[in-house]
Amino acid sequence: MKLLFDHNLPPQLGSRVAEIFPGSQHVSPLGLDRVSDLEIRDYARQHGYCVVTKDVDFSDLCVLLGFPPKIIWIRRGNCSTAALENLLRQHRGDIEALETDAVNGVLTLF
Image 1 (tube, rainbow, N blue to C red):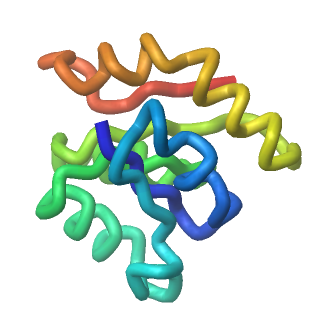
Image 2 (image 1 turned 135 degrees about the vertical axis):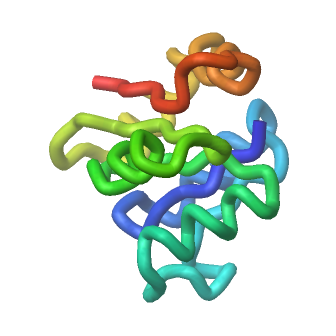
């Protein structure tokens, strides 16, 4: 599963989890760091990404518009890049299961 990290997450996350989530990117190098959430959502859908964010708006868009893209909503306050990386690694199985889940479009991680 390719992950697209929203602007509210560290740009280094994509490279730090690349071996388990190949092709993952941050919105900044793609020129998406100053566009609307809807535009990020559309880009993710068109390019086969799952959006990783701390922003509730993506979860709301998933409810309103359906999926894809799937959403990983991180509900953790300020924390280090290493802590976020560890969270994604710990939930690798859950993230992989989300990809094939026909019912759920949002995975919430605490």
